[in-house]
Length: 468
Image (cartoon, rainbow, N blue to C red; front, side):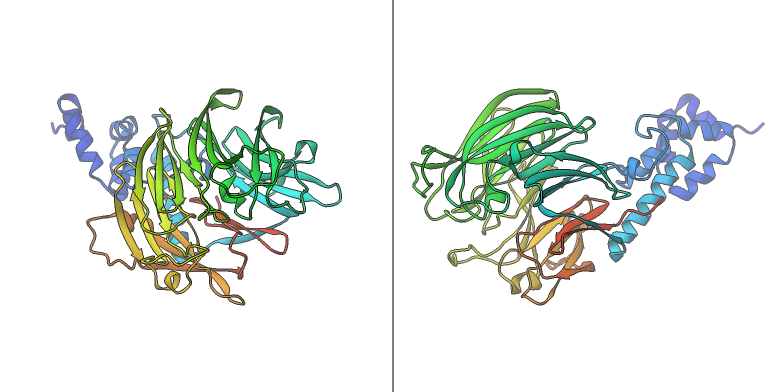
């Protein structure tokens, strides 16, 4: 009587069974499930479909399970069939095809004047100004339906200057200033609010003083959360009742850091002094908090251009990375720094390279890749960019009366240091947006959507996620 080779190996050599099944592609794995109930059960028990998707880096995309609308917790449930996992696989394939061809659904939300916006896995948050009521409104939008689900009113008619969110809470930084304009150089009192998303209740209020003194406050004064931390960067003045002036002994930049395991529990504050604001950098975005993870906080400094990496555990400076060029719009996420060099606003620094895209490993401080973009090099400053798990999106700051165009590149190819690619990484696709907007109108992008505001009081959402 012939013996079942899979049952034979499973009985005495289960590790060989796993290795054999893990070498199969999707079609072969599906055919193996059809052999008999024993094979089907073993493939399910061995999480073979999950391992297959992990080998293709499908499960590395955050929140892909919820966007694909799986009926069960696919990350923890052991007994999943081919149909369960192939639903994720097919969603991923369509998502990749949409990014590589710039195929997306464009939708718009009518909004008021927006100060800032943020997103989490399922919601979009906008901080808007209601001119009739003279107050700031924080609105919550469903990312799939784009319906407005909740409206908060900021306390005491404060102006929201920065916001960030997690899946359970929303953090805003607000100042005591008129919503229509901000007086340059006058001291302002800032308040950080931590709200529980489900109820909208304000759980924490944190107050401090700083000087809101120039047009680059979106860089200099910022709050962010995630990875178990709440972090703010602000300019601290020793002269609380006087107009601020750029003297080294008056203006200093500071990071405030709190351990935050959940919305209700905030630990003691730690402080990182980033040093005085020099006269050469006054009026420019410096320093700039470009991101953090569970291990590091990364700040860009302009004179000389560099990245300062601070340990979240000790709040000490771990390393300084030479940024080569001025790049205040750099971003840090998941151990990777991505920068695009631009012109220093007040002067031309000898040796500066415009429009150079660089990828950095924050752990080693090494520059992994330099990518030349002729279009970015043609226009010397204020380029926008963002990156997802697999793609790099750049928006050259072209001249007026020209539409800005999103350039989509394969980030995974750029990260492959063994590839034979040239330094000019190929653009996979382009996506045209509204007429040229101001350089300070940024966009937000993740693996599923690209979101920006246009001057016609609309929030534009490009959805790359396939409809399910």
